[in-house]
Length: 249
Length: 349
Image 1 (cartoon, rainbow over the protein chains, first blue to last red):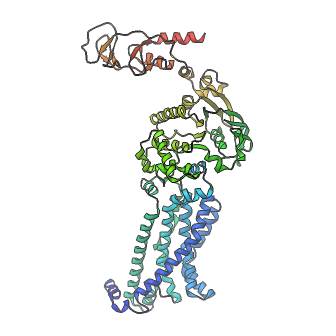
Image 2 (tube, rainbow over the protein chains, first blue to last red):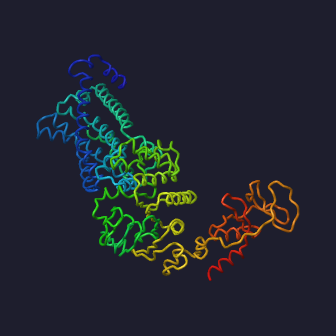
Image 3 (cartoon, rainbow over the protein chains, first blue to last red):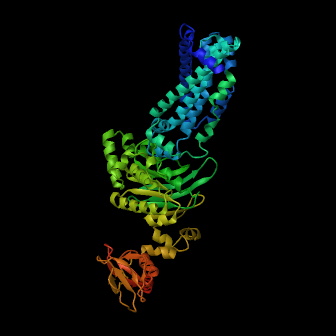
């Protein structure tokens, strides 16, 4: 039984101590994931807010972000490694490139999706552009913005495995080693770890989402007031983590 | 006072929304802009608080050109109510109402105190203040929208189809509420609607606009009904305008007559007359026909109210006798349709 053997590998005390143990690899994997999502958020959130708020450059944004999605992460890592040389830098840049589109789409759609009447009222009440953005658009964009972050995190967790190709000790290592020496228990064990990590991180971000989404917005979402044809319903083109993880790692 | 001086608005796509509008909205009145879609009524309204700027011409609020005031400052001094209310979903009802005071630098405590007063003013219970907009009915949301617009006590209130998204019964309640508020607050209100009945009901003056951005007629509602300026206005105010005009004629000239009554629950004796059933407080409860059967009554009208109500009471009554009541709802007497029509005829004179 391949799964029994995989659990055997997972539970083997030898794999739980030392410089190349499972805990160390989980730690490194997490560092890359958080670093990449944070970096991507620093780029994509301000950009998404700007475009969503002003309504300018939406077409360029969607086009550009779809182009980014087409880049195969493994190819990008290898390319950057050859050009830049540093494995850490090339892996981080590649993961940031992977994480930017979903965060950008979530932020932009979130702001765009705020009810037109609500935005009109905010203007009519005498809010300046900045007040409208921070007091009305951002709080109401939170569900989609957090959705974008969760999406990005899932993709990055799955794809950070490719770092192993350039010698970084992420959870991609057991996958790579397992394939090379036909050690399937190690391969499956590594895959199980990545999947578990993805589930746990998504749950953590779901909790964060509950904390940052205002109660009134959460209630509105529950009663299903989203209008058909809105940005929220167009947003579904964001690829699922399973697809992107499978095609790149 | 709001003044439009030769105001024209052309949009980038070449359509002319407002065409050379000259109009004065008098202070302390409700002025209604009404017309079919594409007539420029909403565009005209939105030029008052600079949600839209005119292509040419001048809009003055209290003698001051609005283009000389920066938009956020201007808007904080003008109440704004829109269709579907446009309440902020992430803020409680109380904080929604406190929006403009907070923007103008009030402390949170003082702004919320003011907001609570306003909820009471628009007839909402204080505990609704802690709820979120999504937890309110459409009519309640619209009341909150009005409260929010009034929070900073602006002299001018702009209302853009505020009641068109609620059902007719609730709408009528909101219209009454607005008239009650206006009697108390004396604001300068510009009210946009596509519903001529609403315009006639609440407007002290009504501007009828025509597709292409032209002002067809600007007059008190009674005058629109009696002397429409052209065929467009005549057809827009409707076929039954002769009857609707009666809303503006008072019924004080109609003498009420006595009517035989029966106390509610008392035994019915046979008679050749219709008899009115009244309760212990003399409030009409229905009719007893000559064959002694009970028949539900028609509409009632208050003595001195519009003559339209008196005529309708007579026409809707099974006995042909319209029932008049006093301010407390007690029987005052009865009138016939013939009597009412005679009064209308004599007034024509």
